[in-house]
Image 1: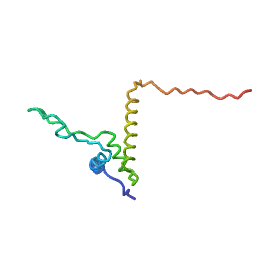
Image 2: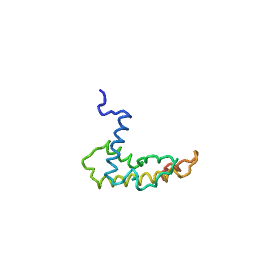
Image 3: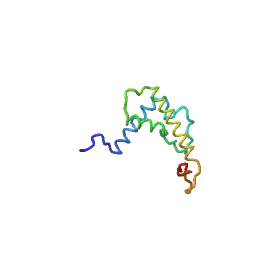
Image 4: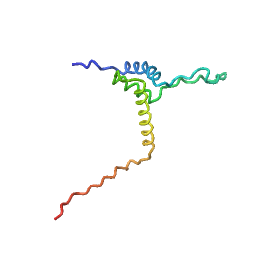
Length: 116
C-alpha cells in the first residue's frame, strides 16, 4: 500500500521556501534588507548576495509543516522560535568543546557484593 503522505525532495524544498515567508511574517523578523538601508553600490562592485533564512526560521517552518495545528498563534510560534534559538546556541557551544577520538564517558562499574 503506497504512502499517500510521501513527498519528494523537490516538492518539499518548494513548499519550505514558499512557507518561509509566512513564518517570517508571523515571528516579526524580516529576511530582506530594504534598499534604503544599505549603502549604494560602488561602480564595478558585485551586487550583494540575497540573504538566506536562518536555521531557526527553517526549522520552525519545517516543524509547522510537519505538525500543523490550529493552536499555532503568534505567541506560540514566538515561544517555539525562542526555544529553537536557545537549543541551537547550546548545540554550537557543545560542538565547540574539543574532544579527542579517544575521549569516552567515564563509566564506573562496581559489582554489588552482599555483606556476609
